[in-house]
Image (cartoon, rainbow, N blue to C red; front, side, top):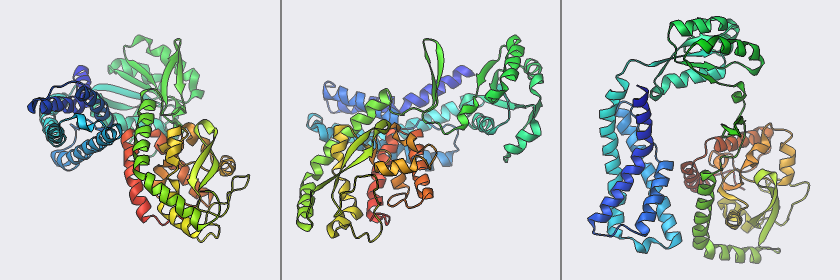
Length: 462
């Protein structure tokens, strides 16, 4: 049973990149091209991007949901990958190397092959995997919000192949009231009776979700479980906090729990930086004439420099200089910086147009190339605003675990413009932390495309 589910997980992770790669090879050979050099590089790059961006097969959905949602999502995600590959190709001037016929055939035939493969795999494997009734039995020790979420996830994720039999807890009524949900809680008994129940009912998995203050009870339970073959897992209560990219690692055999760390480490850091450099180079090449016209417009419309440089907090809270086209008659960068308001007299006529269209942000692509900023990330605030809000909003400085961005999740969610109340800033920070917790390259691309629509119709910029 377990081997079958492990095989299915492997299929979910590999089916898309493998099929897309084989389709590329087939299209190149179909047009009698030699598969070498640039084609090998394209295969490697597309394999990595597809594995990162395109979801696996959903065997648990019904037929209607599969065709209406999964297939549509799959096709859209594929064209996200194609768009990114084309941008990289144009930026590197490498598109001339490839056969256009082979590439066009690959672009349009791959989603057809992917959908067909998903349908066949779904039909063949769904019955094989989910017809088996011998699910592994699991129990949870401790009733809390996190343990209830764990039980819900184990129930929903059938790939794990587990059936949650119920909960053990000493303070049952109090815990049950604290975690009221639509689903009833199956009470199995007090913690002291857990070991006997586990032996009698042949429980294979035990999840201990007790608070750290319950260490004596945890140690007593572990001692009682020595006579069982069950797998034991801890669900520590530190995960009740707002964690960013939490994971468990070790240093010389000593277990270390990462409570808060940047999502951009290892391969993710390389992917993020590479996409920033390639996209910013491409965008700067395209907008250079526009930036030149804006610079001329600023000089003709009001006295003062073209660029406005302001101190902001960057990665790890270090101060950086952020470039913008000047849109005001003042150059505030001191201990007190007033946010722009509607009908602000400091904004020039030409500057109002720049701010409304976000064209004043264009020089920040230079900051991206310099490595100070990213295209997508939490928007940088003036230093004085950081010092104010870090004392008012819990977890405010967590947003500085990554480089600030030209655009971000908060901006496309409607929290763009003036933050004249703590509540508005809190909503922006919540979005920033949500972005850090759920980052992916696909999310970055989604934010970039959504930003275009926000700029066109947003009323909060002035």
